[in-house]
Amino acid sequence: MGCVGRKTLSFFLIFLPIYLHGALSQEVGPAVQRKPFFERLRRLEEQSLAQESQAMALVVNQSQAAMQGDLSHLKTWMKKTQRRSRKVDSRLLALSAALSERSQQHIRERKEQEAQREALSSLTLDVRALQDTLAHLMHVVQSQGARLAGLKGWLQVAGLGTADTAWPPAQPGPPSRSSPKLQGARQVLRALPEPRDPPQDFAGRLQGSREPPDPGSQRTQPPETPGEICNVDLALVFPNASTENVVFLSPGFPLGLRALSVCSWVRTASGHLGTLLSYATEENDNKLVLHGRDSLSPGSIHFVIGDPAFRELPLQLLLDGQWHHMCVIWTSILGRYWLHVDRRLVATGSHFREGYEISSGGSLVLGQEQDSIGGGFDSSEAFVGSIAGLAIWDRALVPREVSHLATGKELPPGAILTLANATSVGGFVRRVKCTCLDLCP
Image (cartoon, rainbow, N blue to C red):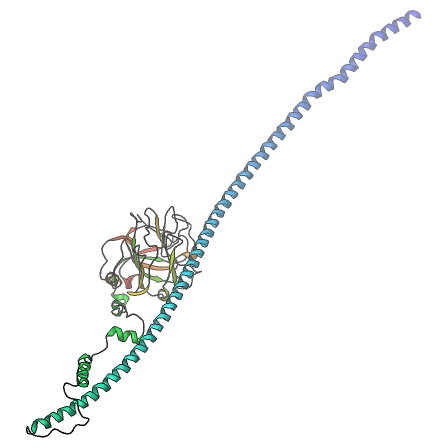
């Protein structure tokens, strides 16, 4: 019995470590096997986080690029707005200066009129005094004539008598030839001028102080009908107020200009004239402009040379939808300028950009006003209508040349630009060749 117990105890002692080792190996084995799974899970999470961070960085970069683009557009718009505001301010200053100058001119004209009225009243008094003097002299002459007639009759009677005929008694009668009164009458008669008509300038001063009209204006005749106007050559038709309807003239002004003549046939199809011509340079985008827009009074146009200096020209005659010939002429000598419409001088002035020179190398366009070289167009400033026979000279045309242009006789020599120099015609503008004006659209 004791032998069996010892065998059982030894077996138990041998089996127990083996069992414990197996149990421990079963518990440790899954933990060792689970360790690579968590590592893979962690790696996947890290990869997912990296991809999300990259996508987020890409979205942030795209948002920054879009924001920078918006900021760039906003800066460009702000610069353009500031430039336009400066331009408006400069034009307002120029307009206030022009109004001030015009008011001063009205004051000077009023003073001149008052001075002329005073001179006229003084002259009237002088004329009245002269008339009184003449009436007194006429009375003296008549009395002296009566005395001379009586003396002549007395001499005739005295010549028929004998030598011993007694002289008539002393009594008041005609004076002798040597009397002081008769000699004074003779001097008065010699001093009196012969009757004649009053001088024309004196008569004009009596009638008023207005200067006589220019002889050239008296010879002005109404223009011929459009059917008789030829030598037009080319015409441009601007159908609507689009910023794309623009025509570029090249090569622009090759040299600086100290005188200028711009002449053209114009027919407008809107209630305002719009911009006929715009010349922009690097230093000034309104170096030379014939500029009208819907904010101006109907039929008025700004003649700009070196913004902000301008003169407002009246062109209401061009708003009837018919063909009209216009010439704008300027010279830096005394700053003189003239506006001819249908051969009539409708506006003139001086001291406008006196001694100024329009520089060369700019951009010259028709139908739009440039806010920058070759761009910055605005539909409210567009020209709608037709332009025919446009030409530009670097000198001031004389009235005879303007008249020949308006009647289609000949093109004055020396034109530096015509519609043949239209190198780029944009938008819906049509270029039409028409020999006579009635064939132009």
